[in-house]
Image (cartoon, rainbow, N blue to C red):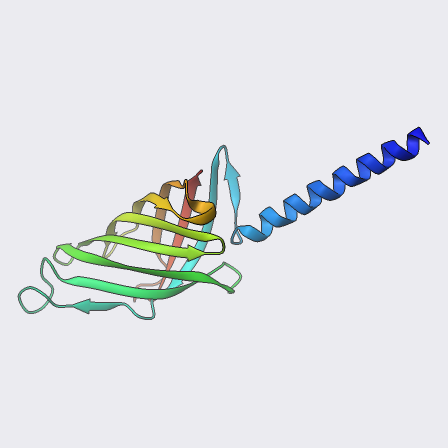
Length: 159
């Protein structure tokens, strides 16, 4: 009888741990890894709606605004959320200063920082909502092609 109870307790514990592990795996986008306290994962933004509003002198000039609301996908190609935000041109032909929100299952992550025309950049994670409400860390931005039609957002989130 004692062995039966022990087997039941061990079996129940294994089931609970498996359910918790499955729940955590479903909550994060694919390509997730944990390094210390940080959770690192990548989503891919398709820059379908990027719109530049020419606010200064005609053409590319300081103060122009880039606005967007784009879908984001996991590395397997499934839609996992959206990104929306805006950027202000700070250096003609070189850089924008941006702030945007990436909404994923269970909440959103907010970033702020530079977006370079021809280089990768690192933005600060300034917060979030829902399961990301205590998020801090960095997001690495990488253009997937020269046209700027898709971007890797690699989040290194400390919670």
